Length: 325
Image 1 (cartoon, rainbow, N blue to C red):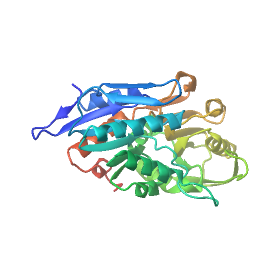
Image 2 (image 1 turned 45 degrees about the vertical axis):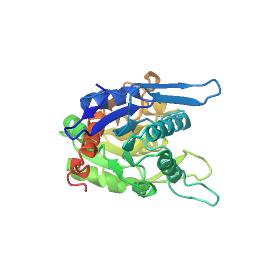
Image 3 (image 1 turned 135 degrees about the vertical axis):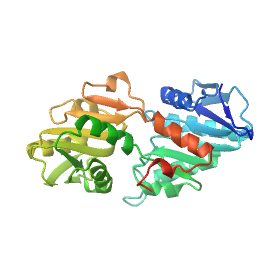
Image 4 (image 1 turned 180 degrees about the horizontal axis):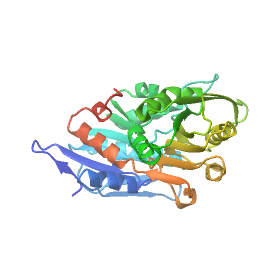
């Protein structure tokens, strides 16, 4: 069964790009359906072909795609899938992008730069998307880039429940790795009933991914410190923050993040002496070469399936996150 049909003949279908099909399959299973059979392949010159092998006329379609490397390839594949659904008369098309591509390029820092996150939203709209769904956007204002509904899901409840279960008995301090993450870290602290600490850092504008840690605000001596962020890319920020915590007397440093980008040399850095454990979700595929002993991966599929069901049933997605509306 590759669709769900309600008594009023409304049909839900889930389709998936090739970037992270295991996540899409888990989402479909939790919804009580299966992925719509799809043919997708690349021509010799790199162009992509997609075709759905079942009728999608009049359906409520959810197009799931992860945006890992090669990110531009997977963006194009998802755009083609949306276009194919529109031309096949799907009634409503929701783009499900657990990790929103180009989210860090959400504004102009200097002249003559693009606002890439806005362009991505425009491309999805132009392709035929009626709705977007994503998890832990790097900047909340990205919701305003799309001309239509945007479901901004939070992985915090799943991550926080795991942390509470594993480390709730310890003297825990939630730490923001920079000033830009203070609001989210504060929500973590309230949920866990833990104090908050902040690391002040400054980036070198001329050297990408280079971070200098300046000072720590808060008491971390002898405590288990939980560093929280939305993503880990090269892990430069996180490891520099972890080192600062250890040098200020922290007992252990636990890292929790939603998106495991893990660009080189993230795995090497996170496997070093400064970080004791890393907790992430599977919004992005984590290949065997990116797995390491300290890593715990939680599935984001239950959250996405609940949100898809809520959208399909015309229920409130916000109700999935009590106290955060």
